Length: 66
Image (tube, rainbow, N blue to C red; front, side, top):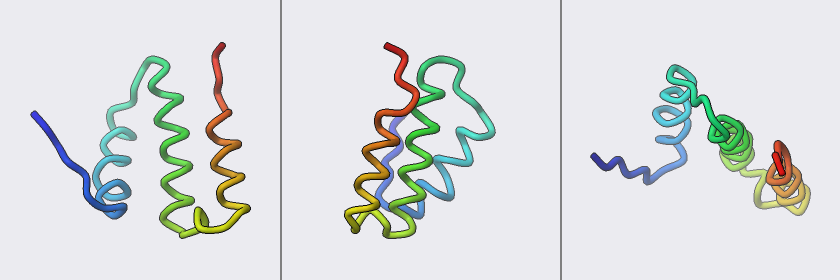
């Protein structure tokens, strides 16, 4: 099965709620948390600012396990 996401709206309304109802149990759980945070920044259009990009970079470094 393949599911293609073509909009931020689909991420917010389908993908994120699905994984909140069906939580991941491995390292992917941390990846999902980062994905969710970045998705919120993008939804609010804050990724278009220098501060938003810096915040995304901080999130990218969060939850590192090595």
